[in-house]
Length: 299
Image (cartoon, rainbow, N blue to C red; front, side, top):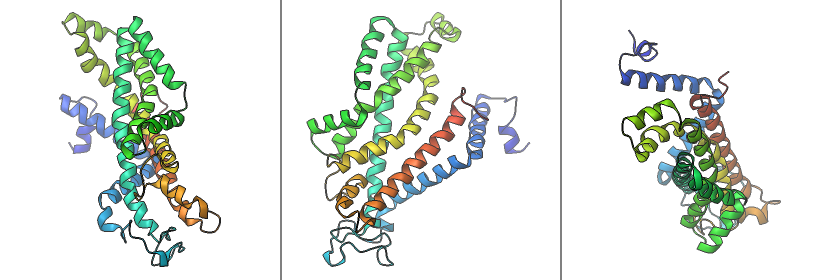
């Protein structure tokens, strides 16, 4: 029996074989989605670019050279230079680190908050559910970017405060999703069986309910990444995110908006970078939905 046959066996002999087989089948489903693979490749390249930024950036992203200001794309500067003569390609490469830091941190904080609040509300019910969901409704009543602007304006402009603001405004959809999943399984037979065996509420949440909510949350997180990137770029564009001279993509667009008609590349290049990464996350999210969402259309 080959390794592939072992993984695709309809009658796994061990739990490890069943788990590895499910992962392999999920990979085959994901790999069949060509657009999802394109998104994955773009994101792998982005991560590699961020890790190797000090070595692959052709120039110092902070070095100013007024003699070369606003140069068009050329052999010396592949994507041109900005108003201070800084190499745009180098700044985009180093700026990928900031983008991944913001997206990764928000993607770690917001779903955890939403999962905790949503599962507690759905499992406890009663007044606990009412209070937590009304708080969630209050956050959902405001546009996400407007609420993030209010938080950053109160806390002060910086990357850390921008991440905190985005995380505090991104958790309500995850809470709603986790609550809906919890309501569908809290009265299931396996939950009743676990109760009869003496499992407490905390154990039921952690061992039985949270794992069943994770697949839906992962899909939602992947699909929300593009929105997080755009919100972070919006904060940077308004001067409330990363502060100069950090090469944040939204701030780079803001720096180039005054030259958009005559020197289009200053704002267009970071805009294209934001577009490509946002598109990659959307494509990846579609592929993950096919793999992880048992209710989705796999056709």
